[in-house]
Length: 191
Image 1 (cartoon, rainbow, N blue to C red):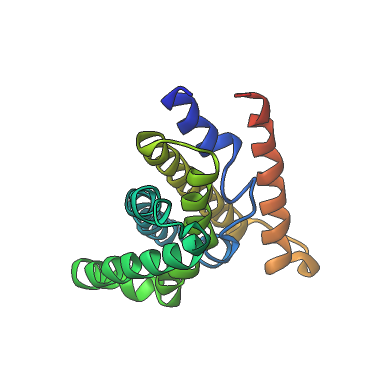
Image 2 (cartoon, rainbow, N blue to C red):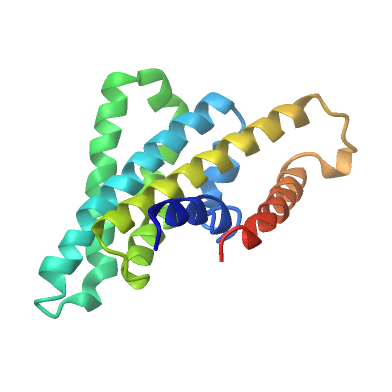
């Protein structure tokens, strides 16, 4: 498959948040500020691409030949947890304000189902190493787009006059549903 096709499809057509409904915790929890959403998007994107770069060869060259394919979920989670720790140490040192703003959500990247899903999808779709990295980069870009767009929507909602019964989480889920429906428009983009 064409690499550009894989990238665009994973970014827009099969968006991990708005189409596959994965990673909704950071999507709702970290989008109240554009800066935090962008920081979370970069951190998760970095882990997503790095996890794919590590898990694909691990699965292909070690687990498969040894007949340990049934352990892929367990080992992938361990790899992702280790990578998140590295990212957490780096952000704590390089950007302490972002580290404190992210709080518990940074460590939740470990259990972010989107990161695990991307690594598992690369195996299930029979992508080679380059295609897997492109798929992970596209999924990471889609994650980032979703986070930033939702942060923008939430910024606009702060100044909007909304009825009292819809304020809070209700309007967030309505907005998320509308964004998801908008992204369904990309479904015919690539077959």
